[in-house]
Length: 233
Ligand SMILES: C[S@@+](CC[C@H](N)C(=O)[O-])C[C@H]1O[C@@H](n2cnc3c(N)ncnc32)[C@H](O)[C@@H]1O
Image 1: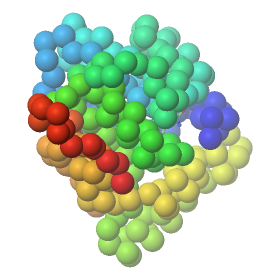
Image 2: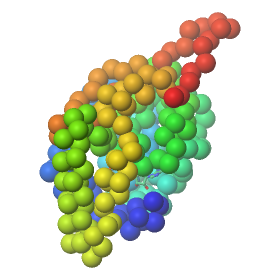
Image 3: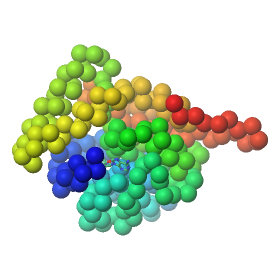
Image 4: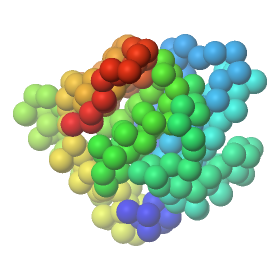
């Protein structure tokens, strides 16, 4: 997976716009604008790629500090070239940050790619302060069976076309439908967030349920010795 992201890094921004018909920027902007952040927010842009979310946060909150984290060093080189100084190479399953370090964690098309989603959600929850936010934009399996078949077929066709045109390798971008096959629906992910210690705030559905934008807040545990343990299903 890391080798594949290393290969696509120079074309990554273009391909994201192409796959979303240019709507990706609008979705990410909505993700940032609708997130209710404090005055000097400290945020994590996880699985950042070239750092789109970090840049948007900087634009909307000039006093913010955005940590741009990805497992692929080559993606981070592009992020640094875009003026993002806190670019850190790390695995979502073992984040090098203290507990409750962030006001908000943004993730663009990342969760689907993590080999252990449960582990990554535990780490995200750990580094988010109580009441802090998780904003995720991702591909999802449409709930309707016919839509699911058509959507996956469309993503394979689109991926094959751009893989061939940009890299001479038709399989380069078919990781998108490949990773989606075993993923969840938008509503399935909303339920997962509840089990991972989050309260769902809002969901936007795009492309007939093929793209979802979630806002959720980390639950504030009640004070006292009998704090319930959070479980991630
Ligand atoms: C599809 S790209 C998303 C890039 C960017 N967030 C965006 O919205 O355009 C997925 C990114 O996840 C990164 N990634 C995959 N597995 C990861 C992991 N275990 N930990 C951190 N980053 C990971 C990849 O290197 C890649 O840059």
